[in-house]
Length: 152
Image (cartoon, rainbow, N blue to C red; front, side, top):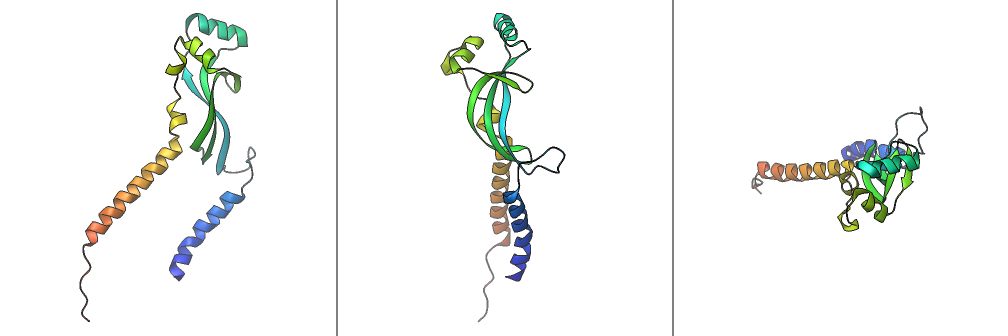
């Protein structure tokens, strides 16, 4: 019992720090929890649509997908609320799905979402670690074999 408490103490301390953390300020240490909006590149605009979008915004823009995210150590674990945008650096211009489809010359039904939104990298890592732990625990159980009978 005492050994399990010794092993659990560092995990509880880390959990306490993570739960009590405040929004990070630049230059103030390591960011444990990340959240906010991210933009993933969705498609390159070409031809007349590219020219029109660049002229309308005054920038060399790309078509992206903006979404909200939550993560740990800069790895996204969960994403939600996605929308199509034109973007240049940190500036975004919101688009409706109809506008995005028109710019790409496709039907609205053919628009998708980036893999980064569907399956965040941090979530893939957690799933992989969980699968590896499951396989390891199954293999460990087979290596031990049946328990030897005790005399008694």
